[in-house]
Amino acid sequence: GRAPMSRAPRWCCWLLALVAGYGEPSEELQKFPKNKALKHLKSRLKEWNRTSRYVVAMIVDDTQHDVKGYAEEFTIPLWEEYCAQHKYDFVVQEGSLAGETHASWSKPILVDAIFGAKKGWHYAWVVDPNTAPILFSKTLEWVITTYMKKWEKREARPLAWCPQECDEEYKDKMTGCYGPFESGCIFRKSESISRMMHVWWGFREKHLGSKHPERGLRKSLDKDVRLHTFWNKVYFDDAQEWIGKPLSKFVPTFSYTTQHKWDVKAMLTDLLAERPELGKIVNNAHKRREADEFKKRRSNSTHTEL
Image (cartoon, rainbow, N blue to C red; front, top):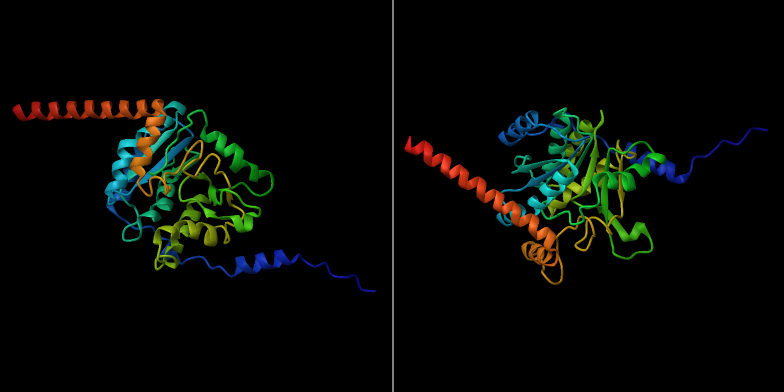
């Protein structure tokens, strides 16, 4: 008799069909915009004196004055001190890199510029201005080892890992967890990372017409990039105990709370009152900034008199 043919599992056929149904964006759509902001960033990175294999990066949308305000006053000083203590590089990009597209889409452009600078950075941790490290004993290496590298044992080496947005309590991850958080993704240097960033950027037009264009970036990473060519290169995990929620122990995200609503500055003010060691870091940063501004004014005054 004829030997029976082996049948692939139903989920395997579904996955292959899903991946095959996704076409990459055109080369034209994958091209990053050419603007002064990106040119200036690349120039800064070219001159950067790298001190670490790790870089923490943040984009501050300077058109949102409230965001720029609390970032400069609170979160940037905390990230600066955290990075200094752990000897990480810290790159702050002020202003969008995305041209006419929503500023949130600056992230793939930023990641590509960081690794494209060829400074020897192996990992880039991209964080938002409404986040801050509050447990300095935890490291980026710990996050990579605990979450990102665990997937290496099961699949190919991840190019990207993000904390996943999940309900505080859930029985099933399929119904209790959603896409990635907007902040806290880690990207690994690789020959494929630039292509991933360009493909991610190229999917933007699918999401620009939505009611919440700021959510398009993370939705695209989940539904387009993760389920497309890079389906075994992008991973998410529920890390809310440590990262992503207002009460996370390591890197909270200061978003909506019943007490403060959307007032991020009030949340940060209360945090510093409760944690004087963090308040001291912020106060020292303000003193250094005032001293630098005073020196600058004196220097300008001296030149004017001459």
